[in-house]
Length: 150
Image 1 (cartoon, rainbow, N blue to C red):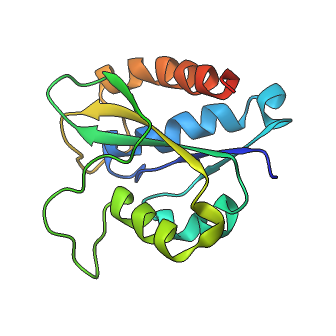
Image 2: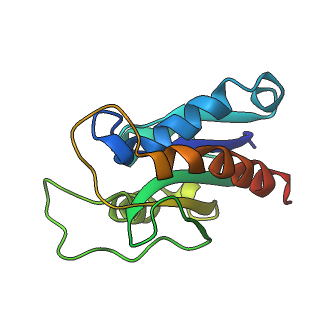
């Protein structure tokens, strides 16, 4: 079995949408953590991570989700609900993961944990809002807590 995997999701060119990528970068630079956990950034494409997810006991996904209180953090042990209608050319991260789990037998027993940081909305720009930037250390700590759980 491969070590646990942390995937940062989001487009860093779209402001707060890049929160998952920013948190993953912080975690990837932690040399102690890197000895026992793999950390990658997947931009917005969960499907591109299929090979990296195979044969893992746990995969933690860090992503931004629109909501009312920017910077708040939630942890889901099930995929977030699918938003609206999914289209063949645009699937949300939860929809992509659901598709992968259906077609990839080695993912069916993997535990997926979502670490979600609430954002007001995504906007063009490379800067996180002050609220979301302030939440990144808490997101990172929450990922570390989840990784300590067995």
